[in-house]
Amino acid sequence: MDSKSKYTSLDTSFILRFVLLDNQPQLIRAKEMLINGGEYYVDGVAIMECVYVMTKNGFSRKEMIGDIRDFLLNPSIHYHKDFFDPIFQDYISHPSLSFDDLVLAARVEEKGYTPLYTFDQKFAHQSKVAKLVPTA
Image (cartoon, rainbow, N blue to C red; front, side, top):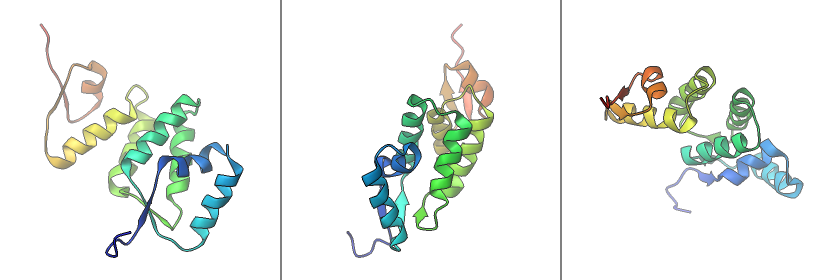
């Protein structure tokens, strides 16, 4: 670990142990790590992968976001809260949009690389940064 780093990081499999409850030895070890006072960062890619895996495992959007946010609320966990919390809300309130599309829209908006041109009509109509490219 870089001596300048404040945190170490957790990957998707670590988070999924808390959500899926599918591997008790790993879950016990993960809980021990969180209790022992470490500070951990969860990157947005890990959050996106969790959404993907949970979708494939039949979780509803509300369950998914609730479980992920419950994990992220642990005081030992740090993530890009200002970026992801609005996306979590949008994901629940816009059921026809994918989590990936919402992250993409937020990223380009954050960077100022807008509009975001798309051929996806639903996305263009529900996103404030996406703009539909006419085909005719």
